[in-house]
Image (cartoon, rainbow, N blue to C red):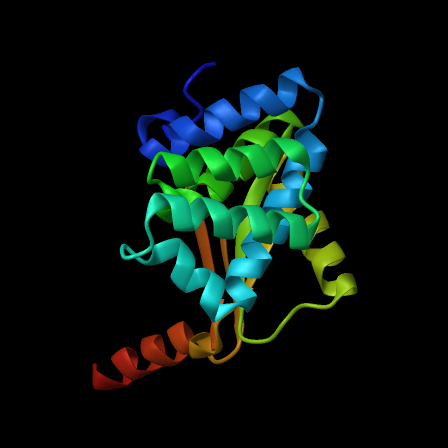
Length: 184
């Protein structure tokens, strides 16, 4: 597989590429994508799961057992379940989130989409996401997948990262510019 914007250069990129190749060969890209999305949300929602993923004190066997239990509880597809076992056995559980991000990029590229990382101070509703997708599709010239996250530190507005472009319409940045201009 060709190097997709440097993804394969990293350890997580190599794991994501291997997972993507397997999912593509088995015609399971969508199923694996859904499972990885579920996993990512579980890490974000559960402090215990997040600690399991990042803790260096959890050994490979413990991580494998925990990942197997989580996979069953979340109803993950077999490819993703097996992949979690590989991460645990190889001592690479801390690469889970970077692998998920890299896989999402590979899957989006495969579908002819691009991903925009969108940060807002409050969650976007479905209508706002749809309007934003349309605006970004015009700018990118292809379908855009929105990867939304909430960061109350931006105070209000929106920050969009689309490829190498960054559009910062956050209230925090506007206030900082105003403060700089007033200093003079």
